[in-house]
Image (cartoon, rainbow, N blue to C red; front, side, top):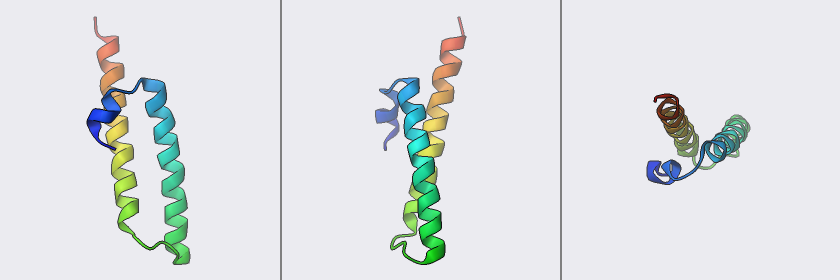
Length: 67
C-alpha cells in the first residue's frame, strides 16, 4: 500500500491495517518454514508496509498533539 493511501485513512483504520499485516506476516513466515511460500519477497513487502503504516500513524499522533 502506498503512503498516500495510508495518509488518507484515519488512525483507527491504520491500526487495523497494521494488525492485519502482522497476522499476514506471521502466516508467511510459517509458510516459509514449511516450504509452501512461493514468493519469499512477500514477507519483505509486508514488513515494509507495517513500517510505513506505523511511521504515518506516528506522524498523525505527533501532529495531533502539537498546538
